Length: 252
Ligand code: ADE
Image 1: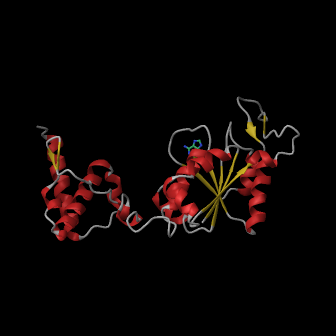
Image 2: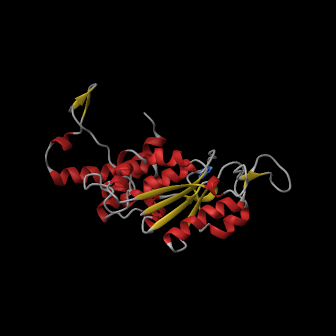
Image 3: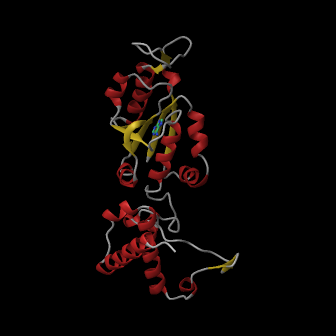
């Protein structure tokens, strides 16, 4: 996977992603990251990239031409028109199925805006996907692009070791992850659940699966609509729903 980030702050991207698991994946060649400075494609003698909005109003707008030049430099390098993600609070909200879909691409371009946005005409010309990372407004697209690159990279083959593997974590099967414990077996009077110390693998698996269902019901019940549960697990969920309902009606 090769990520191409078009930005006014390339250092923010390379420094933000250069460490930990993503940094390691770059060193090992599983992913590549190029941050292109949009300012390098300004034709203005002061390297200006923004101007006042037509029609008036607050702030500045990033001009079409430098953004297009930065985009063209990527197209020329890779020889085809890749998917181009524009980070904006007006986009579709990023989720795990989008992560898995984007992870299938060979190249991904992230276009990071600043100021009051980017001239609409260049967006129409180059953008294939409008993506938001949540319903709040950030100062620019750099942090959202890093969030997306981090999440997508976990699904690029080779990036995670077996132990780190994406298979058994939150959102697998649309269920949240079960609680984890490590040594000591007792801390501040709180004991690790007995079953985890029992060495009985089938019981441990059953307990973890039930904890995942319980946690999802309490914290993100809407995810259960899409979860694939066995008949027994569905019965367990119904029992939990009744118990939770009773507790709400008769709090202790
Ligand atoms: N740019 C500013 N805010 C954003 C958000 N919430 N998601 C994606 N891009 C953004």
